[in-house]
Image (tube, rainbow, N blue to C red; front, side):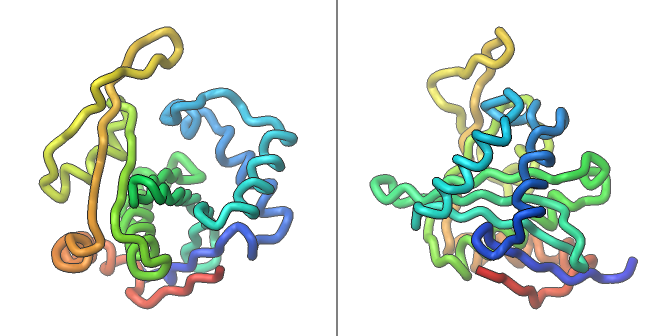
Length: 194
C-alpha cells in the first residue's frame, strides 16, 4: 500500500461546499445509527450548528483528509468545569470502516487534540452497540466504564460506555502503540489548517 498524507482542516477554514457536505455525511444512515441524536439534520439546524461552533472558542470541528480526499469529521468540545474535551467523530463513507480509516482517524484526532490544540484530558461517550468505536479503548487495554444511567434510542435502553484518556498517557504510551499500525499507511508528519 502507498502511504497517504494526512491533513485536518478546521471548520472556519472550510469552503461553503464542504460545510454543506458535512450535513450530508452526518445524515447517512450508517452514521446516524451510532449517534445519540439519530434524527436527520435539516439545513437550517445544520447552519445554526455551524454558527454556534464559529462563536464558541471551546469547540472545534475538523474535516480529515488523506491525499486531499475527505474521509472523516472530528468534533472537540472543551468543558472548562470538568477540564476535559469531549470528542465525537465519524467516517464519511461506510466502506472506510473496512479499510482501517477509523484507526487512522483516532490516531491523528488524538494527536491533534493533545499536541496541536493543547488539551490535557479526553472524555467520550459511546453507545454500547457501537463496537467499532469501543474497540479503540480496548486496544489500549482500558477497562470499560459505563454510566449509571442508560439512554433510550428508538424505544430501547442502552448502556453508555465512557472512555477517558490523558495527554501524558497518549504521548508516553498510546501514540507509539497505535502509531506502529497507522504509520504503515500514513506519513507521520501532517498538516493542520486552523
